[in-house]
Length: 325
Image 1 (spheres, helix red, strand yellow):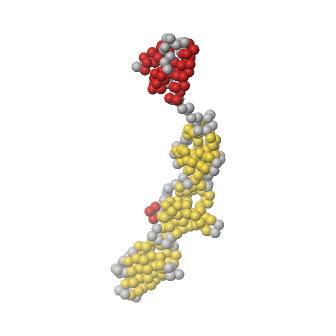
Image 2 (cartoon, helix red, strand yellow):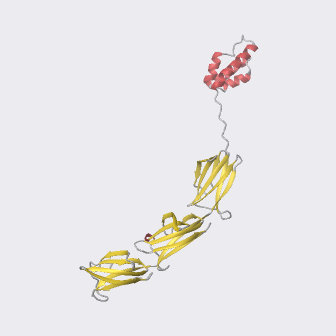
Image 3 (cartoon, helix red, strand yellow):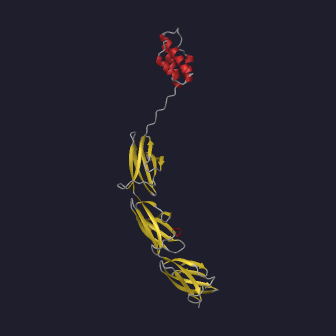
């Protein structure tokens, strides 16, 4: 239908001496504007002079212009290709990367794109951008300029990793992961536990960290055994920290004779030489996990109180008896 109408208009206008370029112009205008212009000033009058037709054609072109829909120019863009390395000269980082691209306008930065791919490609309008790369808790940021011909950038990240495990008395007795609580700090000038990095580090898991020195605090859960140590994380390397807790499991017994039957319903309190209570228990032979050291043990039974001195050696589990006199 449209082709038929357009052909008829062109034939009519051409036959009347109307410039053919004007006819094509009107044909590719929006149909409503074309028909409106055609109804007002027709170029098909066979009685009009060539000069009159020219004036009408110009008028028709002017009437059609406001309704013309011109295609928007395609926005220019360039391709930004990224990859990350361990430091300036280290190997490429091949896992756990998050990329964020910020447009930079003076002092303002706005997030425009992000990706979790290892080698992402971003299609961006030419301009200046801030590229932020994160590998675990380690991050790096660089400014890049994107051009229409494309831009490639390598972002060095000074990152390493930390893996922590625990033992009780020695490597032959691994600590159950559920019993080891870990906290990691960044030391400050006057405080080894200056700034907390994480308190949810799990034994055996890999924690990606910026290069540097950290303070590790390991607690043998349910005991008074706490081990503190400094660990160093280097770029491109995995630091394995094995924490040895000098602790043991002591079985407490209140007996009437050495090796005798333990008395039921006994209440137990274990204190440091300074009087700090480190453990309490109830029963005939409760097991108590406790750090290496010397302690005062108090047993209460039938309204009577009995005391004894207990020495604990790391990794040596044994019974401890108090004899009723």
